[in-house]
Length: 77
Image (cartoon, rainbow, N blue to C red):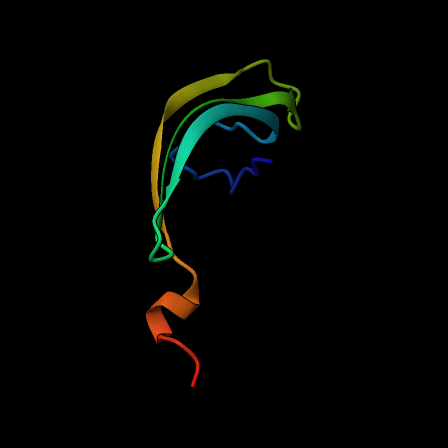
């Protein structure tokens, strides 16, 4: 969901409901760290809250590094 922030915003009004599709891969190491790469495609303002027929398409790649907090704090004693 996108929400317009006001009349002085420096972006086009894309307030409304959109959709995102994507796919990716995930690699989990034995240490608990996980690496992810995914491709996504988004369409903003598929159903506009403002009645305007403007749509913004975007696509790109997302990269991530994840770890459970137990990896950072060490094993329990």
